[in-house]
Image (tube, rainbow, N blue to C red; front, side, top):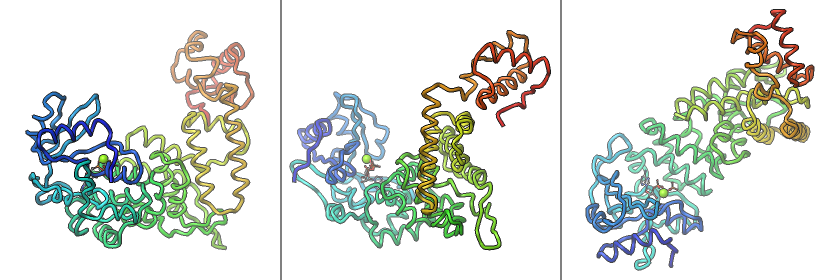
Length: 455
Ligand code: ATP
Ligand code: MG
């Protein structure tokens, strides 16, 4: 079997070989090539020591940030490739980091420290595929399986628990029984892992093609770091609009939106406040008044704890807060929401609403989708015709008001907002002369304070 290796990693393999060392491409790039995918990076392993690697590539730019782990980064035409000495890990501490690593001459030992069989293959043109743990067969059978004893491997490094779920979700693979059993049993070890690492794996997991399936089957693992989700597990909605419990509804909607971390994370949390807002009629029908705000409040805690960036959190909370806004065919309402969300989040909101509808019962589904389509059409028309929905577009600004004698900053804001409301409601034309006249009237009558905002 011959794999095609791009020029840059090939240069590295050849250079090492010419200097008498053994060298292979290894790990994710071998896995992805065998799957027919394009690897995003090519890692190389070799029996050369870090000092020897440096010597071989003395003509290149080198970084040795990972040298104590045996990794030298070689820069070829601006691309960074990692070259790592065969190594075995010493005892692990804190369920994540080995106390020490030691170098070895054995490729098989190096492959043996890797997490899953499908990640534990190496390849070179001379030696072909080196696959001591059955990775190729597991790829063929679409299985994620630990190399060696799963309990031991997850205790060494608990991040592997999330990596297993992520690979399974991304490639649509099953998790082998013992590996699955063990990762469930050891899930609490995730408490010892830095949230940044969990965050990175979670984002990739929820963007995988099988995200819904994995979030369902391994919900107890996810609940280790998002315990609030437990309230939603099996929480029945008893409402004709719904056919799933709250958790299943949310993860179903994750699978019905584009694979983007912001959209998918927002779907995963959008109804999380339902159990806390639940009220019941005498016939058992449940309602969830105010769940949007409660979901946003719980969502804020979760997103902060998981250290999402502030801009991500702000956008996500807006989507959660507005996910359920019932558009009624009026441009005025669309403009009000648009004013709050801005164009980009408005487009996201439409995707959120669509995913939400597709995760509800069939009841009135066609009607809901038609309303959504009509809303999107009106929204596009508002943008195309440059209809005014924001202070930025208003024909007067703060400077114009100062020019007619308004000096108090809060009053300026109040007047501009009141004018914007009138324009959005269609009671005033967005015309400078018209608006300035009205502004004067507001000002001299003292009718406006800074509180006159859009509500
Ligand atoms: P991707 O790059 O798509 O995330 P990958 O498998 O290449 O997937 P990397 O994090 O780039 O993942 O790691 C490269 C290789 O290093 C893996 O294929 C695996 O062999 C090994 N590896 C990475 N993380 C671990 C880990 N936590 N435990 C054991 N081996 C690991
Ligand atoms: Mg990689």
